[in-house]
Image (cartoon, rainbow over all chains, first blue to last red; front, side, top):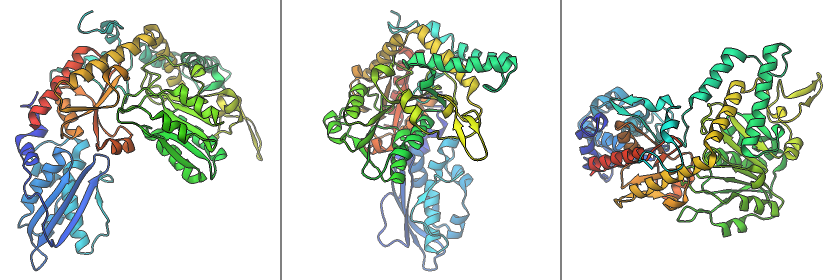
Amino acid sequence: MGIGGSDMYRQQILDHYKNPRNYGEIEDPTYSHTGENPMCGDTIRMDVVLDDDDETIEAVAFQGDGCAISQASASMLSEQLHGMAVADLQEMDRDDVIDMLGVDISPMRVKCAVLAEKVAQDGAGIYFGDVDLEKTTTEDDE
Amino acid sequence: MGLSETDALDVEGIRADFPILQREFDGEQLVYLDNAATSQTPEPVVDAIVDYYHTTNANVHRGLHQLSQEASIAYEDAHDRVAEFIGADGREEVVFTKNTTESMNTVAYAWGLAELGPGDEVVMTEMEHHAALVTWQQIAKRTGAEVKYIRVDDEGYLDMDHARELVTDDTEMVSVVHVSNTLGTVNPVSELVDLAHDHDALAFVDGAQSVPHMPVDVGEMGADFFAFSGHKMCGPTGIGVLYGKEHILEEMQPYLYGGMMISKVTFEDSTWHELPWKFEAGTPVIAQGIALAEACDYLDDIGMDNVKRHGEQLAEYAYDRLTETGDVEVYGPPGDDRAALVSFNLGDVHAHDTSEILNEFAVAIRAGDHCTQPLHDKLGAAASARASFYLYNTREEVDKLVEAVDATRELFA
């Protein structure tokens, strides 16, 4: 119990929350997309640069505000996406996100954990004309 | 006075009535501070439910057999008991609903849709719970009426000058929350009721956070409608109360139709049963109603004045302890002038993170917008953490809350 036993807040999560990687924005990204959890107030914007063939992710930056889970998840995802095929991003599901976080996520917090992933996926979906969304939310999920 | 007790209550004796408080999570004893969401249920109330199902269960009103008669009498008497608890004139003024929200919707649909139209105004407050805010907002959209909100000032009090500006002869309804579930503010509802009546408007007071925590006399208050929930006052879930002045309920048409609420039915038309049954369509909340009456007995035995003082003392202690370090923002009025809750944020830490860490210490609080999103927008916070107290909480539990907040601070530093 106490701080040492606090699974959800293992050092890695707190480290990414306090020192987010790839935080900021990219000038002229291939696509940029924003999402939020209205109930929590979590927001994430992701800027993504694809290679000339639109197949591989070359650069990612994010900005956001919200709880430690949502922001750390965005930071960790931004590292993982670097060099990833867009097709592989689109294949990701919530189990992949939870594996990436490496901690137990309580059911109430899953939507915080998957927000960044949804933003990155929906942004790509809009860019390729597969989905038509103003904004991403995770409220309707699960 | 021991540390575990404020001077108002024998907390140790009370805690014995609530076995759930003995639960442990990974060796830490539960510290239950989410009472504004729902209170725990004492054994006499649980026993009333069990006893009802063991000995009396039957459908009410229409049965001529012995069980049905006993169930009917117990269910009807429960209305009298609740009426007495809040100072209503009798069962005619007490409608059992599902919860405060359904009580609000009953008036909004039954009265609002019939009476409101373009040019009419409904005045609420910026600290209104969504139960009232969303309901009147949507009824206004359907009827062409307009909603207005009395400002909340920086200290968390209603701006009464603004209230006097907003309530005019165009106002048809003044719907105000008695005690803010977010700020802990106790609003001057009698003054607001008078203001409404000065302009021939009706007044609806949302008592979800007041009835469990203080003596309430709706007659003295003068409200035309008043609503509250059973599960926040030691009663079961699934039951709420709508109080209405008899002559107003008499004139209102029912909002739900069906069995139980009728007098004579033909293929062409129907007439309505007498109050309050006219507003209780279908098989009602029988076990819950009987248990709510038991909850009223339980609270009256302890004394609502004592419950009030105990809650205020805990809230003031929590306010003082949480603000010691200077990095915790507590929303609402000062510690010595609030109901039994404190909503706060620790620095930049998101309230959900705070709540999650507190949970590691078995400290149960609520984090979110507490069904007051527009108020949170005004406070500039997406969410807040809320500790809310009741008659079984102790100063040691407040200390545990503060220790857990200290640990959260350390973790996020």
